[in-house]
Image (cartoon, rainbow, N blue to C red; front, side, top):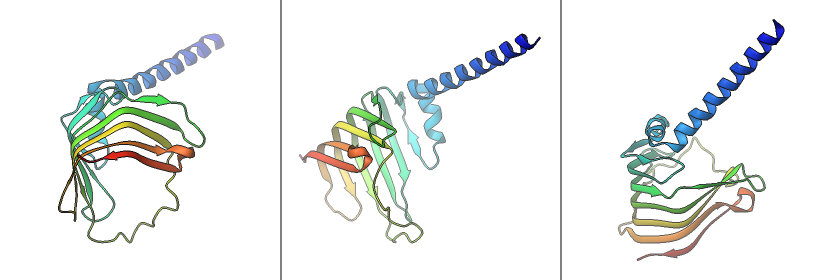
Length: 174
């Protein structure tokens, strides 16, 4: 009777683990998973989702509120190539590498009022490193700057040197 209870327990544990792994796989590797997950991210507004989060991905429109009254980041025609997940280095939990990250238009709206409820960060260390081989933005509009930046190209790396260093190299404007 004890052997039956223990084997039933192990079977239940294995089934639960398989369901959790299957759910994460569905969320990250299927278009249906991305279409379900992203609208549930607090504050994120997104439409036109195609592809999976860990595959070739695109979205027609993405809007994310930023700290400060009225501040936001809006992206049109966001897309990326299938990212590669790399083992952590130093204090990083994970490294994510993209061959390409692109948007046809990025609108950055900043708050007119300084934020008084948040202190500036003591450091800019990130727990996850991000490397983008080619960053392409056709138009970058920043509130308060009359002329948009066009045909922006660069390589981006966030979180080098154990998460503490961030670089933008090869910046080109067309």
